[in-house]
Length: 565
Image (cartoon, rainbow, N blue to C red; front, side, top):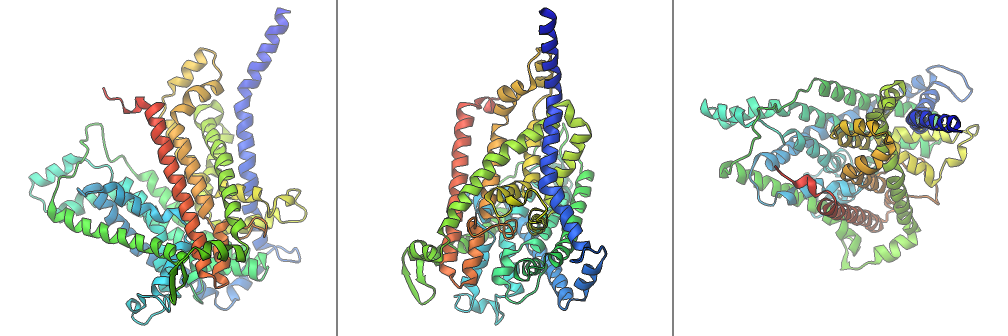
């Protein structure tokens, strides 16, 4: 009897030891199913014609298509122009917040991140109202039209600004005060210190911000679709081929062409990050800016101008949703909310987006965090399966949403695929959102997990405590702020994304962000602005709820974080 009990216990222990490996295989299978296989289908679709013949015929046909060269050149031109404008603005804004003494720093930080609360279409709609044919600032364009490259650049700069701002805020957040003190003792001028100390210490952040902004600008679909007019870019060409012409093979070719510069940008960024060295050593003294009116006042004026510009864009979208008929009848009403959305039949799209965003946060957060925990805190994470998951987890960062959407069409919409029933469902949309934003969430989870000493796992093992018990009682409570941040990130992006969903929704699962496109095409600009405003209010409410919850958690459950020796 005793031997049988020991045998049963040993079997349970052996199964518990193998369980992390099995769970990692499951995570790898899910990533392969919803990421690797759709990208494989995209590649196959680009080199296989309708007759089933393999070759480069689609690429040759694509190269011979009139206007494709112009679309490629226009796409690169937009990417370079947006990068050249956004990165200096974001750098100066981040520099003002990190290296100057400004009043209301939290307000300026919030305004700098405000564009993240809405779809990229919000900026496009607002700039149409400000600079369009009936816009009050039309004369500022000196006779040029906002419909085309000017409008695309303006709206994309607005949408990409917070991404560059976040990167550069981190890059400028740490500095060694000893370097500046040495420069002062040698009589170095302000410009000399800026060129020889500040810029070199932030160069990797600048390059990363430039790569992220460039990739965002060339892969965004919503902005050129709304405000681009007849200006050809690759992102819109993908939409025309896949949705307008139902030519998925050609769409796959265009998607691969768009994927190449995006992947190149992220490879360059990844290589530079590997070379980056720590900016602070154990002997470093953190830099604290001292008040200086000659520096602080100009930077305050700049931040004020940028903050007012952000408010003007978001405010115009909200104002458009409240006036009866811009610019002829400026009487305020809620008609666009009550009747405009109802008559257009898209009010249900808002509830669809709420369901999708909640499911994305509820399903994606535990999956991403648990997979990161298996990689970092279990022996199975150091094996070949762990290496494969790390590679797959880094891949979505370089795959635009449009490219992922075309891959989902070719893979899940294939009649021979047993998972064909998932296509056009809320499930596939949730999966697309989780995969599309997997990398940033995965890195957030790993950062939180690596901050924990491995002694927790060693002590648990010596006490014969299951690693899953340690996860539940120790790791998860300590990492709860990061878990909530992942949930917030997934919710907001699921509410605002357009490109990842534009190919895989059905009339029954139409999301709110895509409905803005449909309303704009129908000429219902007021209703489109109303839907955009609803999304901004929803994501702002989610951010406020996140702030409140994290404040209460820190106060009641994690007060130890604020203790000082």
